Image (cartoon, rainbow, N blue to C red; front, side, top):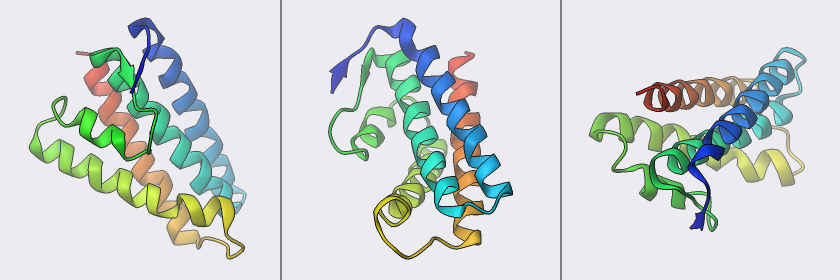
Length: 128
């Protein structure tokens, strides 16, 4: 984990929203790998915004480390939903960024949807 000034949470959220915008544009333009890549990075930045705001820290090791950090921020059902959505995104990260086979349109669409849901829940927590 890395210490981060809590005031920077808004900057992580801004990056998340920019990446989500690019994911939506990529999906519309049928650039499916880029839609997934942008969705993954948007989700990572949004969860960083959350942990920075609540804990003054962000995950700096494996991307999945953030799930342990947010466990106390969300209740059981919300946490389970976010963990499932984030894990789904992370399962496509390698394929979208490094593998020669393209991701499918349905994988891209579900990635954008999962990202939108994560960001919506993060924003709701940040508004409290």
